[in-house]
Amino acid sequence: MQDEIEVDAVRCFDAIVVGAGLAGVCAVYRLRQAGVSVRVLEAGGGVGGTWYHNRYPGARCDIESLDYSYSFSDELQQEWKWSERYAGQPEILRYINHVADRFDLRRDIQLNTRVVRARFDEAQERWMLFTDTGEVFSAKYAIMATGVLSVAQVPSMKGLEDYRGEWFHTGDWPEQGVDLAGKRVGVIGTGSSATQLIPIVAEQAEHLYVFQRTANYTMPAQNHPMKPEVEQEWKKHYPDRRKFAWASGFGHNQVTNHMSGKEMSAEARLAELENRWRLGGLYMMRAFKDILTDPEVNEIAAEFVREKIRATVQDRQTAEALCPRDLYIGTKRLCSGTNYYETFNRRNVTLVDVKNRAIERITADGILLEDGSEYEVDALIFATGFDAMTGAMNRINPIGRKGRALREAWAAGPQTYLGLCVAGFPNMFVITGPGSPSVFSNMVTSIEQHIEWTVACIEHMRAHGLSSIEPTVQAQEDWTRHVTEAAGKTLYAQSRNSWFHGANIPGKPVVFMPYVGGVGNYYQTITRVAQSGYEGFRFSSAPAVRNASYAGET
Ligand code: NA7
Image (tube, protein in one colour):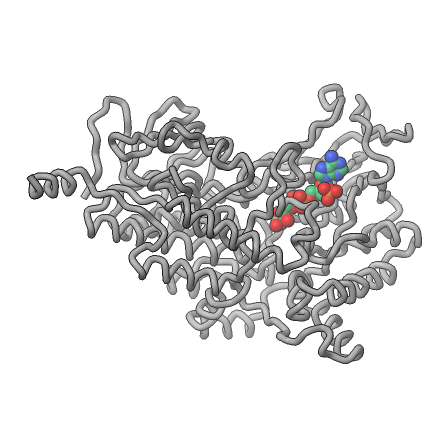
């Protein structure tokens, strides 16, 4: 069945998917399987989304490769060979391209096409999508696979236009790369992107200045080439591994210690923390079941990391400046890097604290701080993050029922039902949207769960002759309250200065956006909702069905 409408120059599909990152590529595979006609519209010049744009040196996933991959095809997961424990950006991009080719997905993907506007046509019950190429698309379903960290945020800084050097944002890195050899380089930011990039740039640059406003906690990734025995074990048990991930707290196979930090002796706690340090990366956040709920337990882990920093960084003052303070570990996304703290022992690296002496302006030659000190740099790298979770959606600003814009609906913070759908915006599915586990999980797991749910919903609608679906306002309010309450039980509620809250974007409502109730629990919830006949949603019947029933009634 194909939903066609007769409008000149409008291209009609059952579904339009916006974005060809990991979510968009998964969507086209699944939708095609379900016999849904689909076109994916992608702004970039290639597939890959995050992994297409974040090409900065050192860019790497902080979830293990064997977990951070699609489960939808057993042949694919058996065939593909990851070269490292944590895959770097080039390898992940190759993987996504491989998937696009292997399943012949490219014929439904249109690149270099940015969706700039979208409007729900109430009479037709279809979405109209408008692109920067001047094309207009009409679709029954709008699947927004627009990414959660896809709108790079360059902070507005006085004088940037006067700067004579080159500047870049990590999230929009030039495809041809950047030659930083022998240059004086400034990096603004010390989040995940910066901590991956800094050790690599330090090896290339003549001198590197790191402008740090908030010290964050960086774990050693403990990356290494893939061990054949690990790969074999995973491949032997892949279905079980995936099942475990889908039912787990964070959508992956990392082992959690289910004991409270307080139940353990000081020796046992220390051994656990050492174990987590050796395991590397995000494993630290699973050290104790209450690491993100009990401030004292959190502080034990935080102080353990500070001690590691002090033991690594030779200059005392630099070490202390790198030690995070007044920040619960994990409440700003934990960083995972290689040789991050060691890099500050290099003679060509200087840490510049811009918390107490803020950046005053960019000058023609570099960066001027409030206290009058100036740092001359030939290249400036903004590792300053993203307008996370809502940025890409708000840019398109879909217009729903009664002409209401999404930005207006989300003016006080994003509201969704299940992190998937928005009241007043029928037939629009937000993949890994606010109110779902999203950035709090292995994104590939969350993407697959959302795509599976969305495609099953479309199949349900087709089978029952339904034309539109949208959540009730009540269900949306209840869910949004539940999302806030779940966060309220954790230390996130007390650490509001992060992109999880939107606090990095001036004027953005400070609201905790992801759902921290756990991937497994969440998946059970959305499955139960679907099985119950989509409790909390309202459907309308297809016109033909409506007409038939009206005819029957008269
Ligand atoms: P993040 O985690 O948002 O980090 C941005 C960094 O940039 C952070 O250290 C900020 O300091 C800093 N920043 C932002 N604006 C400024 C200004 N105006 N002056 C000085 N410093 C500034 O972005 P990433 O790209 O590293 O990581 C995003 C996610 O991608 C990551 O969490 C993973 O999930 C993958 P602040 O902390 O605001 O003081």
